[in-house]
Image (tube, rainbow, N blue to C red; front, top):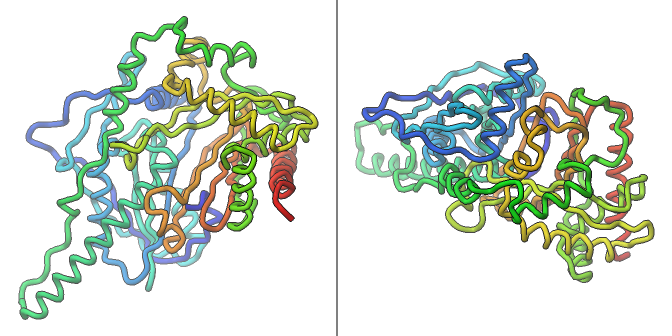
Length: 481
């Protein structure tokens, strides 16, 4: 699954279709109020405050993929409804509480989809504008928090959906694509079998539109996960020993947020228009070779990539100690492995990067630092933030300055990955404003890619180019000749 902005995706023209999620009135009404996740509560509160000061910050996490052949719109609608019925986080109606966030969950029988035909999109440019506008319709403070649609053409269809971050993370995009595509294949296979049976029996009745697969179970509940997580940390106070890792990092760093170590030409307290791009750093064979190099040095590929970033930053004038934030997937391999939600914790990592240190030395240091981080992963970033920096927690609407951030995903291990290339599976991430630089490294069957969003300043453009070239140089230098 490639992470790429929608304007760079070159999705072809066709007929626009939308499906709007609508609530149905149930006999028993919504389920009792539920507890939300740490990320959700903070995200919603920030959106509320931003709206109150007329300074909205917009973002989305969207995805698209291709269906080949003539599309069955009834089956596609049923597959999209199946997605919402399977993941209750998409059916939750969120309600502010005093300094927190609760929600009520509609049952799977209390939601439906309303189809709207949007007319022809005659050029790739029109498709891009249509999707940009549709993706941005999701709003943290409004329900529903997912919007879905398709661009239909003879022989193929682009299916898309967009979610507010409140109900999703990057890994959820692959989960959703897999759920929709699997349900659609099941429904169209069933429809074909039914049509053949009717033809053989010379049935006169017209087949009813397919419905979502009745046997598909719901995924593990993100809201239940959140309830368990928050209860486990309810009694935590600022002097809790479980916060020692965060506390030590804060003291050495001078705050919870590690600064991006290079000057991007951004002014304090100001957001800039985002610049997005995606490029390949290594092809499939070369990233496999780099993984072998890392294993030979006693480390993991992900830590080899982090070490390469740290060495590249050091080469551009960065400090002798790398400090950054890393996202951690909290799903595990059990009930939540294929659940949609914001299952991401963000944790600090730091390790030395000597001026003459080679990849082996920095990789070993990064590996040790990662083990230390894993030992403290039970503490959520939002909880640590609230306890250790309460003033910042209460007032910040976005990161206070350009923050150093490292992210890597091996997309080949995600649900449905064996079909990603054939489906042209894509994830699209967008923010309305940016004050720093973000790199999302991700591996697909076609190699190692990096998706970038950075502030639109001349210095940020130059630094981004130099840093990507530097990372590519470190990777290439480590490979066998």
